[in-house]
Length: 350
Image (cartoon, rainbow, N blue to C red; front, side):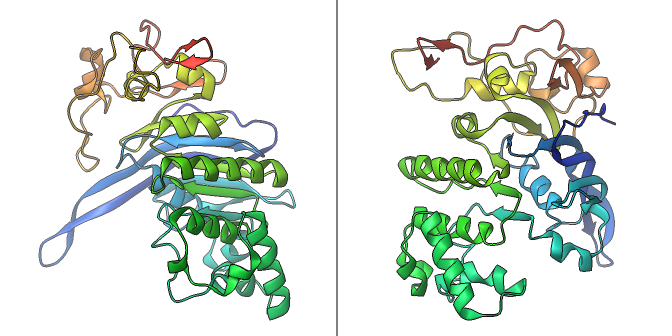
């Protein structure tokens, strides 16, 4: 179990010991012979209006966690406590499907791939207007007016609403996806790697758009990503995941400058330096492969790749605990390690 992470004032989402296991079935009778521990006892909270970055290597459980929160995937166990606009607290993890529909007005998702997430046979009017139709806006003129407003909001011209997705670039398609996510005035938006499929210059435009929309509408973001430079730009806090577990959670500035978990240090060491004349000494780059979530190692899941591992790391599972105010880490050696982050020199990261 994970030590309880205290809720903050104005908390909109609190995830408690969330677990999602996918059964492994084999043989003619499809007997269950094991399970993939995609999400393994994850806890965190989100304050109204903030952005929490969820980072880690591919396959660490980031997307599964986000889909569980929206109930696109049913969790195996745990609680997902969401505070609705009227002040009620509901457990999304156990809510019956018939009660999820009204809640989906307040929880929406921006998908990773702007090419496959839009129906190529539907016009922009139908794509962006579909959530409105599903939730009762049956008047086509009203729906068209709202779609035009949403397109302007994300930087697209209203007359584009009669066009189809193939007529747009990747960045424009992602703007369409953002418009669709905002159609019902949500309070929580889960962004699943929304810029990873875009060019770098377009990434900056989309990130700036998301930040402007957040300020204008007081949106709360769970921002899933593997690019730490993007996470640093948009996130207030960062949670680092490894093989289904959160291994570190802290304010963005503190995690980038003073990481307390060896995995966080290794991720930061892999961030490219903008100025090639700058050189970070003693960078500890990761070796080996990510542990198999269907058969994770004993003790700390990270110990086979950790340069600081000791015997206790191989036998005992560390607990995510608060090592300084607001800074949580899951490491047996958290008190005696001096880890290297990204320091600021003359305003530049090095």
